[in-house]
Figure 1 (cartoon, rainbow, N blue to C red):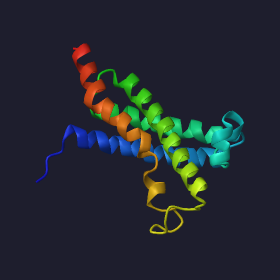
Figure 2: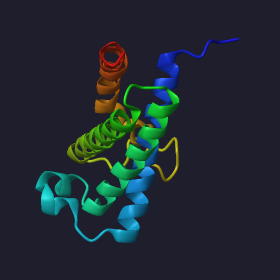
Figure 3: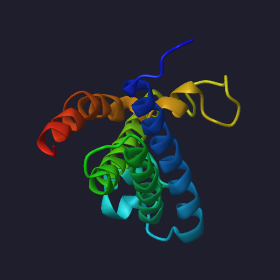
Length: 153
């Protein structure tokens, strides 16, 4: 019988936020996408030309909502504020990780990182969002939330 630790619960909710940020961005971009991300950031547009600003907003909304639920479940101090802020940072950092991996693929002349998962671009496309969200999330779990708990007593 394995113990369910604070860290494992935190990782679970972080993973949900990142995964659903991708889902929210995809569906919001498909439904409402008009403004290419390249109009705001030429580097992002050159790296991933199909991404839209509306998709980014949709991804942020999904991630912020799930992070709020996760913060409430985990009993974070001021969950109604810390949750959405955490979700926003996860969505933005996840996008930066995705764009970084796409840039590496383009520079290497690859379409996908592999074919282990057909139609998904390989394993790296499933975990590229963690490039920058993992260190950020570790800092939040290890330092920020415990600090907030001591301050809000």
